[in-house]
Length: 143
Image 1 (cartoon, rainbow, N blue to C red):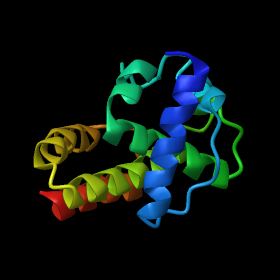
Image 2: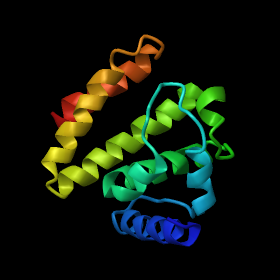
Image 3: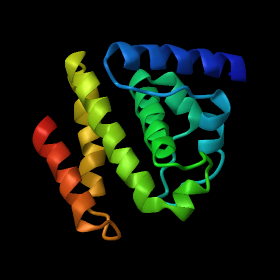
């Protein structure tokens, strides 16, 4: 997929988010490309192609990047390595919105599949307790 097609998907998703009353800022295709340009330290193998093929993953990543930008970060793959806690905070915020939107769309199979991931995050011994508590809250809210 070329950069113009990626930008179109991003713009369509931003329109959805704005209609859903999530206050997202503008995003450039290059930011999404940069964010996925290296390996995640967690071993996550989700690719930009996976994200672009899934409405809910694209919603998630746009919100995650938006949250990081609102924290003052320049978007790059290095964020995963240099600010893992802040990235995970943004990730949890994005997950909450993603699950809310999928629930509102009655996409229960998506919600169930993502809750499997949330449960696995609870096993991460490197996460601070407050982030583990947020993971548990997501499970409690959407299970």
